[in-house]
Length: 533
Image 1 (cartoon, rainbow, N blue to C red):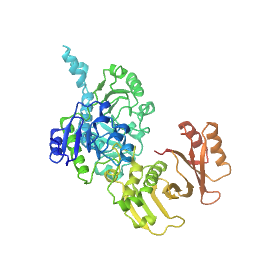
Image 2 (cartoon, rainbow, N blue to C red):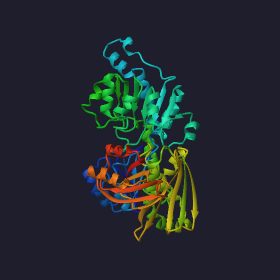
Image 3 (tube, rainbow, N blue to C red):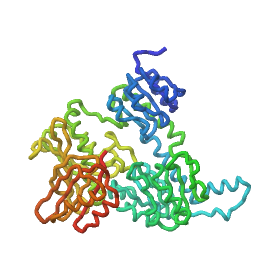
Image 4 (cartoon, rainbow, N blue to C red):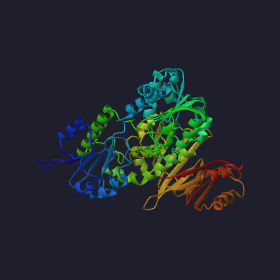
């Protein structure tokens, strides 16, 4: 019999028994693996929590039908199957288990490295077919070979540590990891990925899937690699461009490859599967007993914390802040996220330290959540991990990124002002912003080392150039000739004839070839295009 005084939990997909037992200690738990997707909106009424994996879609329609839901628990990493915006709008916590499969993914990567270096899968298939072809499957040793790791988040670090145990020399590329962190782990951090391509015998990718990383390892990348390179992708399908890999395998540029993920899954009819020197597994990176059990237990703990009104450490859409502080800082969160994205995009090279100054009325409040928002903007889509208000600081610490906060009750010219300073290869780098009006519309007021005044838009471009006549017209002419309309524009300069900056908002993105056309003009030092979420 149901105890109506207890919160109700619906477990729609299979999780570990230990997780179920944990929940049943305090809550009424219904395990309903039989519910079809089209039935969910009708079933979810009255439940305070739901636990899912990847098959269930928590759409806006389902969330709207949930009249008592407090928390959605995703037993795994990705939350692409949850409409987070709809959940947040209704005050529903969305939590996941981001560390549940990192060991499994790292070990699978190492397994694929070994399997392709020694032709294990091919030799196994041959032997089972009744053949004895020892001379056909000679391999190469991993010891003393150079492993290039692209993306140095949690999984990338675990892969590096395990590869070092096999006596491999590890180099890594991740512009959001400090030199000190690489040194601490005994890994050679490279400043640009081209150096990694030139040095690595084996390459493994551990990047998030985003518009910026789709096709990251493309035809140009393979051309820069050693002849006979071997590649592994246990991260996300499409980070290694499959068409480019196909040609590299055909030409012999790539001696072998191992894929656990594909651009389209399942990869029915994928021509890559026809190559004998390609090893493929059906997205098994997280498929260990331990990882699945861990995911179920972790998400049960998260759901229990949410229903008990305790801190939810893996919440992807909230962070613990007092109501008073939240009312003050909430309007500034979108601005600070944009400042984080802005400064890392315009920087020449990686940034290792940030100085954030909060001025005006903001100086009277705890700025922790704003600093977290800054890191969320700086890292989101650029690191392997899912970034949220809970883990952003931890991701920064793991990468050796330092931040100092200071406050000043006075803010010349502004009621509130947030300024972020760092140092790139060119010297001091500063961005700043404020909000205006009762709706707190965000404004960028500093860029590079200049004062500006422009409202952020979805598509923005920033130019640093010699302050000579005709530059505004030159940019406008090039963009106009390609049918790209400038919606807003602002120029900042320190003195006539020196350096100036131009900031523009646009109606649509600028293609790469147009950006390159502007970069090729001798007067331009920096040209950056940014898409803000």
